[in-house]
Image 1 (tube, one colour):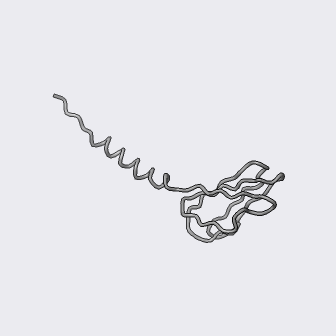
Image 2 (cartoon, rainbow, N blue to C red):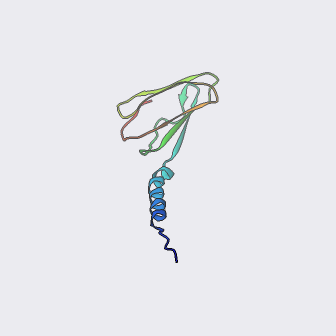
Image 3 (cartoon, rainbow, N blue to C red):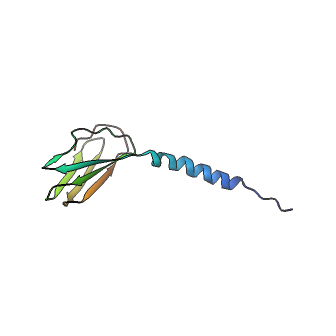
Length: 95
């Protein structure tokens, strides 16, 4: 009778669950840009969460932050389009 080793398969499955779990818990928040303003004044996000900035105006919007916690520049977001930023460390970010 041939002996079958199943341990490697179990280890692979365990690693996939461990590494996949934080990604599954990350949230995607949405902020609309309408009438030259954000539809939310403040937003609490967790590390790993992302924020999608959707342009609901009829003209392009620049979305940027020079905050120490997260520096980014979505450049020019056209009407009806969006740009997404993922936050990888804690802190206050002004956009």
